[in-house]
Length: 322
Image (cartoon, rainbow, N blue to C red; front, side, top):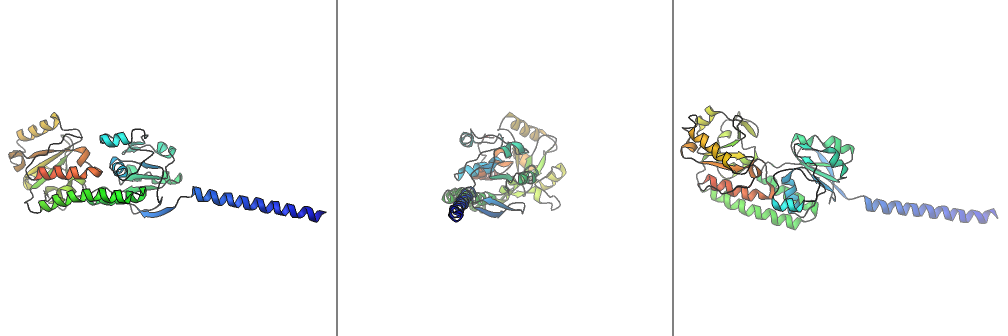
């Protein structure tokens, strides 16, 4: 009698084990997304989903390019540099703070499977805290035109829209090639890029985004003439400016073109300190919007290149957008 009872018990146990194993395998297959290893701008190897589903992006240029190649996010940065199109596309997406002050609690609360930031301390410092929540952080470089093209292709891989990414990159490349090739036939002027506010001006070097564009378009950046000047921005010295004598001066403003820019130009024209500078004597002082030139503007890089080219070679560009 016991033998007959033993057989059903064994069969029942085996069934339970089999069902449990099946459920476990099924759950694992569904919940475990495929991953890949990539090396980010800091040289850190990061394990990320092949096609992330819940992305948080900490700066507008990365956000702009991610949406341009078919992506969507669950968290975005607070910024005044949104285009109307990007603002409309992300109107229902919650903010996770500014690029300089990201809200870690808000980011973790959105349960992202990938966070994308910029190579600045305010973003790179998040890595440890996000790692504790098992959230990968990918840090991206956006210091140059080449970084835009590389980012578009990488984001296209993430979204699975490689064809869209290729087309977007090719459009930017076509405009770039046209302007750069034409610039090679011209004599590029000596140029100064000023960033800041009265009393605290800096000069952009070729390491800064605006300086990189100037170099690509054949301009000769006076901030690069002295090899001892290092970094993206260096302090402005009137003695140095007079010595190097720029023929064109660019002024990066963090606000839309307005009376304040005209006041800046007037003050420079009336200043005895600037009186003998070639750019001032010829009144070749041009406004550059912060949204396009203070940092990489993403897909708007073609617009930025066109504006600087026109200003460099004698046609003042009309642009009032921030």
